Length: 115
Length: 116
Image (cartoon, rainbow over all chains, first blue to last red; front, side, top):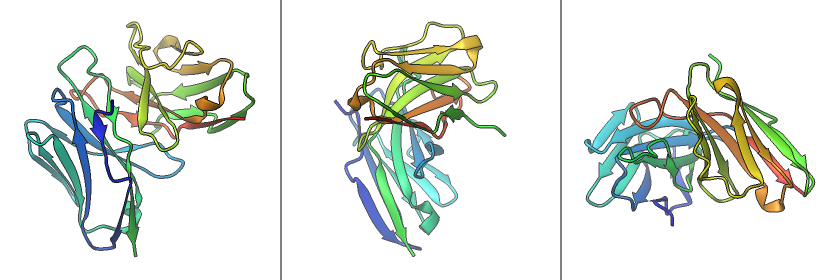
């Protein structure tokens, strides 16, 4: 029962273009969402987050959009750079219950930015 | 500053042997997590420690897995009688506290465990 789904295992874009990574979730109790970036042989590093009370959060080249009614979020990277090539994980928190510490992750999307 | 430190970075062991994986969290972080990433899978929650509270062990896949956190700091994940399906990257993370009201999880670089 996968509650956070990243249906695209990989994505390839040209340098300078926009990268759009998608994430869907099934648990309507999720109220806080995060994106992590992971390079090979390193741990995931936090990138950007969004609360369910917002529909957009922007940080430099990175913007996360949240559509609560569709249970969908996306990460936009513009312009994409070769150094953005990594695996991107979508993750979600349910802060309503007693297990608010459990961060649920998707399987990740491998982004390749070609020079 | 120092991040989450995990050792060893790689471990190859024979089926049936016991292994110990170590995690040194960020100083001052009261919450500590263990996750596992098997090939082609997302990060799977294993166990959570918060201060002096009883840990949440609900994610441990079998009774061969155990973990402890001594003195509220360093944690050790032990896998007894390892099996080939235990092969994965074991990731430790720490945070200031639980949930979105505190900081996001900060991960170590993981221990890649290979059971032959």
